[in-house]
Length: 303
Ligand code: CO
Image 1 (cartoon, protein in one colour):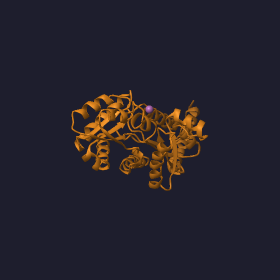
Image 2 (tube, rainbow, N blue to C red):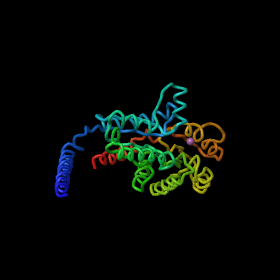
Image 3 (cartoon, protein in one colour):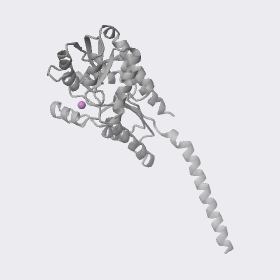
Image 4 (tube, rainbow, N blue to C red):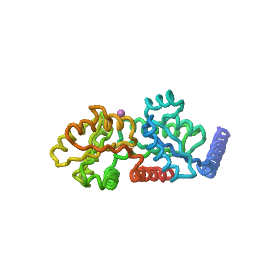
């Protein structure tokens, strides 16, 4: 009985020493011993048109220039566009989950996921869910997995960045806004993030009463924009996309020659319409906002 007690005590002591030793070992060789490999995943809706891709490439090039020693991978969130590119151009582009799985497999430990979406809508929600899943998996199965994974917010998602976008627009269209109305047409969505466009409209009104925001599908419809234009004295309209790329919607629904495009409908109302066919990705001011959002989540990797 006594001997058994001594043995038990001894065993307990040995186990304690082993546990203590392994804890000390883990503390000295643990997290610090991991080879840190940082990367950036550049995520965009995508575009299958050369003009649209030019805007995407402009943003990606700005990211590469700002982080010259870091590997920048690209993922698209639109499956329709990815399929179209695969079919028509034979190129394959990864969706975010695949791109992240590849990065984890290749030993990246820290990944900053840069969303270049305009609003925190359905596409962004899906991306955020993927990032959350990788974060959780990495907690329970660290190998292969990430030490840290961060995600940026879209352009029109916080008051400060909405105000910055409005300032960039005021600088970009300094001459046009004196000469007539600048109508910015966004995509719009059934998602409640559609409200971001109304917020942008309010921020733009602080810059000039000649700024108008409309969307292709959402609350700020063409008819609303038209009735506001009619109650003003403007004759000239500059029509520009409020989208990262000037792709299909810009070239067809907004500035196309078909009779139901915004351009044709406004011309029928007697306005002189000048389409501006560049996406926000081609605007340095907008790119700078995106780079600032990246810089925030890049710093967060070490926090
Ligand atoms: Co669309």
